Each structure stands twice: as structure tokens, then as C-alpha cells.
Length: 361
Image (cartoon, rainbow, N blue to C red; front, side, top):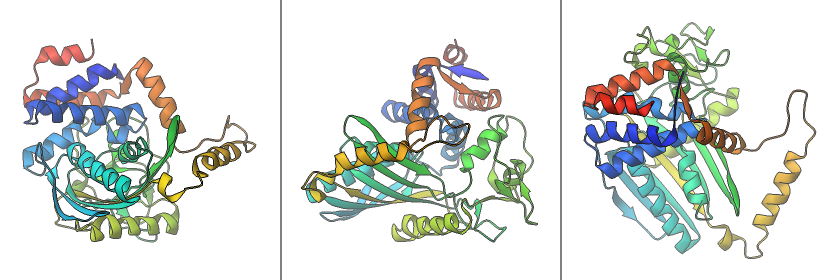
């Protein structure tokens, strides 16, 4: 395991993307968002993605420094075309537009299409919550067929994330951010790179047998070499049996079909689509009940007697807050295989050896 201090990790990742053709601002933004995912414990959406992003950049599947187009722009509704820019550049533009329209109208909806990998969806819920807004996000990834629906063994879904953010004045927001599969694809990648093992039965083979071996999804691969889910024969399983599978279908239809991004399917370029709804509590709640009632109910929720071995009842966002504090203080841990793959990518784009050495000094 390698442990890197937060600022050094951001700086190092930023150097990789600047060498790969991004502006200094974009490179820094990508480094910050990826590192933040690690800080919150979402290692699957963190710096482990660097080799994948650069592979997509080299293939022309993602384009640096894109300014979004807005082909539909109404007072409370917009369609945003990300033009296959990095999600860390496209995402903030779409969310800012949703926030502006919501503050003007009290309610807004943004249909984002053709975004590069949009990263941890909780980032966008937190961005809206910082402005005092509730937000709901339905996401799909066209071309990323990874997940078998309930009752099936073949890939038909992306990991189809779903996210809700609820602001709490003076406190961290409540952010429910989850893949509708048992694990996000990035968690399979983490396991393949020597990190945390997968839960029992997270994957399914074509014959219906269950597996925790990343090779089920990726096929045989070198320890720190390229990994591509197209080489595997198996699938990730949808979580929650028919309920998770149904929610995944809704994310595909709203995040994919409704936005114009397209739902998941074969022979489609990778693109994230995200349908987001923003609500201003100040406009919907003139009696100002919302904030106090959120506080009261969360206290009531967390006051439940716990089962054996559990210290306290948690709400969405609690584990991320605790992990962020610990990793800011002590650094971000990365499995050796993960770091080796990132370093190999850094060398590939021309990051000098002195910078590589400085990252872990």
C-alpha cells in the first residue's frame, strides 16, 4: 500500500492530465475531483480512473476543455450537450445551470447528454446542496454494458447510478449516492488492482453461477496492465433483486432515453447521461418547516437501538464525512497495483521521474 498526502496527489494527477493535453485549470479540476472521491472513501471513482481516462483520451473518446452547448434553454428546463468533454468539466457547467434556473424559478430540470465519465455523482449533489438546494440525479452510461438485470445472466444495464442530495444548514448535507448494481464497476477495478475484495456473489457468470473474481468481468489481465471489461464474459449483479433492477431500468430510461444521451446498448460510444431535478426548499416551504423537520427526523432516525456490533445508526454521508477527515489527516491509501498503473500512465504521457518521486516523498 502507498499513502499519498492530498495536495501531492492532486498535483500529481493534474500533471498527468496537463501532459495529456488539458489546460492547467482543467487538469487541476480533474485531479481535485478524482482525489475527493478517494477522500470520501469512493476509491472506485478516484484516481484509479487515471489510466482509463488517458486511454479514452488517446482513443479520441473524450476531448479536453469542452464548453457545453445548450440546444434547449427554457426558464426551468435545459438540455446540455457535453460534447464528450471530461465529466469533471462538463458536470459543473450543467449543475451551475440547474442551480441558476432553480433559484430563479424554484424548480428546474437539466438533461445532460454526451458527457465523459462524470465521476462521483455525490459531487454534483453536494454542489447543489451548498447552494441550499435539494437535487435528484438519474444517471446512465451509454456503451457501458456491465450489469445483469434480476433474473438474467447477460449484461443489459450500466451501473446506472442514482443520487439524492438534501442540504442541512451548518452541517454536511445528506447525500445518498449509489450504483444500482451490487458494486460499482470501479469497485471491481479496485479489487482487480489489489484493493478491497468484492462482496460474495457480486458477479455472475454466463452459466448463472456467482463469483467474486474480477476476471469474471474483465477476463484474464496482467497485474498492472490494461484492464477492459469488454474482455470478460460475466456481469455485475443488480442490487436488491427486483427492486434494484427496476430502479436501474428507470435510471436508464431517464438518464439515457429522456436526455437524448441514449440508454446503454452495444456498439455505442461511452457517454454519461444525467437527468437532474433541482428544488429550492425556500420556495416550496414558505412556513420554513423543512430545515427543522429534517433535523428532528434525522435525530429520531439515528436514535434507534442498534444491533450487536454496531456502534451507531448512520445516515447517507456519515461514512464519507468520517473517511474524509481521516484521509485529510493521514493521507490517501492506494494499493500498490493501483499506484503502479497510475505511474505507468504518468510515464506514458511524459511526466518526469522527479515529479513521480516527489508525489510519494
